[in-house]
Image (cartoon, rainbow, N blue to C red; front, side, top):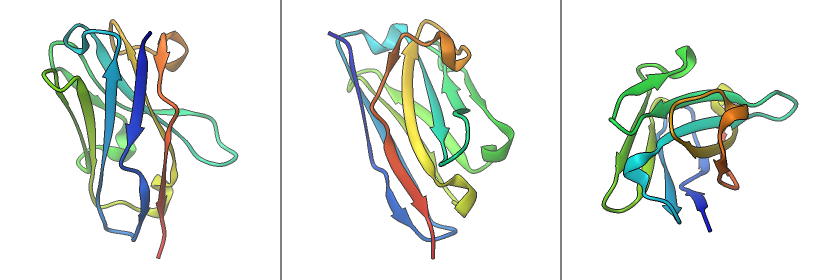
Length: 120
């Protein structure tokens, strides 16, 4: 059974940082891409970042230069380091796994999400 579990969310002040983790079980992470997505209240889910199986990375424009995606295949865990957070980053963040960095609708496996709230 494939399972993705996000952690690391919380409440942070503007300008602060958080590191999200996506712990993966039931599949060999080194063979998969991990996509990060977020959904703010009243808004559609949007892509944030992705790291491919070959460690290629991709970022959506609003987070470029602030977020860094990485992976540890030994720990079967992916990470999203988020710096210089602003209130517009407030959302539930999800990780997803598939063979490549695809559109959200194409991912086979999803985590349950972790809440990130940026507020003073």
